[in-house]
Image (cartoon, rainbow, N blue to C red):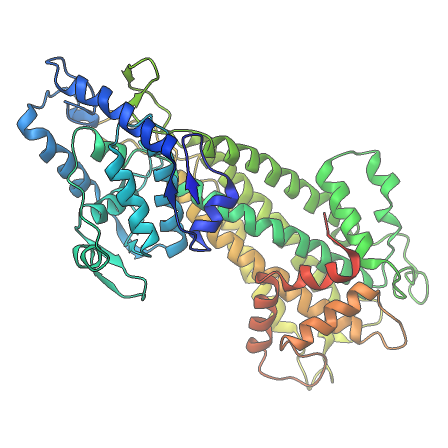
Length: 509
């Protein structure tokens, strides 16, 4: 992965965070780093105070720092700001955070020396992951505490996880990999801390996960419609063309592709006539489609942020070093919260469909709770309880973090975004949504297999065959259910559900 001066892409972030891709600095980036550093060095030599170069920080910015104390100042800001607490965050989050900070450093707008940027790349390439804690960022002035823990590792201090997964003193790990700790100079400590990199990295990864989950939800909604002997007429393209939301049309097209050739759809008038299917079935494209459009908006924000250089102060091409407010996380925080709302609603409608499959009064001929011998067997009764608990948690996670603000730094930093918190809860929401979709998949496939004498769609048959091969067992007497649900979760989480369908339908939208 070659890092230049013009930003990175979402696929770059995923390659480094999840794929362990190696990093190189382009010649253009090294030249931009050196040029910006010359400007900072020139300002540092002047008697006039410049924020971040020869002053304190935040509410202490009014103090002019003499040259002999400036290296200590930069070390001190890293040490004092590395004040996180709570559980460690995931390795992929820390790698994304470090890579995105390196992206901004290489823009040539931060004034950091080339050797500091190279050390950041070396640490990532060595598989060294700083210990970063859950709490410490307010999402303004950047993700301060998380980034500080990463900067501390560059200095050879604090703790980090080695490529073998063991947490050890950072200095030992750097030495083992031949990496020399950096000795920070003017502005460099501040430049390593002042960014939206943590919340952005988590946004990029959530978008990748949600892309798979929205396709998965279209598949499970189609399977439930099929299991309930519903009508696929509501998925007709001409109906969705007259309300032209892109996501809605895409979801309807996906469901229609899954149901092509089904022998189960259209039986809704056979034994228990009904004019229309319930909202959770009939309106599936509208709900999932709205979420898809939310994802598209969030991706636009993420792409803009990936092209940005977030620091304060910044070095401008004309040689000025100017303070700014670009570190405020509001643009990212809003869409993180928006995605959590969409995830909650997608989980909610999936749970309603599952409940309908289990209720003999609404399932159009299926046994109660899809049990083998109802009364002796409880079937999937408690699987729906688990799904309901997950949905309830999703609703709590949908409460926006970005609507909150708590003043800090003696009221200098008096409005913050809470974007890091929005990102953390979105990760939990995405995890829970995966489990909810997995339970609907489990119920829908069992229900379809109980429809004896009716032939499912070829794509449905492919899903059932693949999920059974993955260890998710079909209908039968009660058994220890948790392993089946865990296997279904892994099947959805790993993208195998979408892959099984696409072997029949071609790429889903």
